[in-house]
Length: 120
Image 1 (cartoon, rainbow, N blue to C red):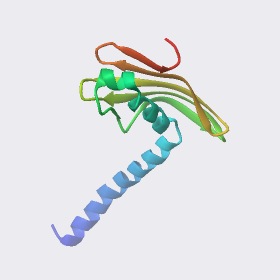
Image 2 (tube, rainbow, N blue to C red):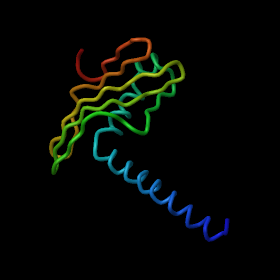
Image 3 (cartoon, rainbow, N blue to C red):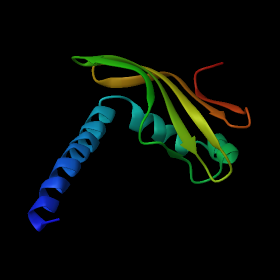
Image 4 (cartoon, rainbow, N blue to C red):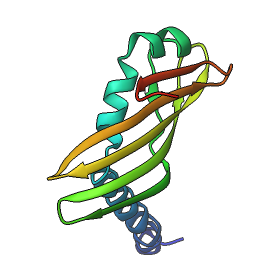
């Protein structure tokens, strides 16, 4: 394969991956992903259950919607720790560009449930 062909092939494969990755980070930043993870990964009960360090998956699932300076989010983010994995359940509402959480709940693989914000 010629050097020119390698560059063309690399651009055809790499450019969409790079754009999707940057787009994914921008999109993720529109929702309460980072703030939710920051609260949960430093929470003592979550660290005790999952094991330190606790980290969240890059992608999340659920329903999210923003409009102007408001929005809603109902998300699930996979978590991993040194002892076990879990899932972070997030319910949040955005008003005036500030996210408020009605639920931040971690469900560990062993069934342990930790309510960081909100009740059962």
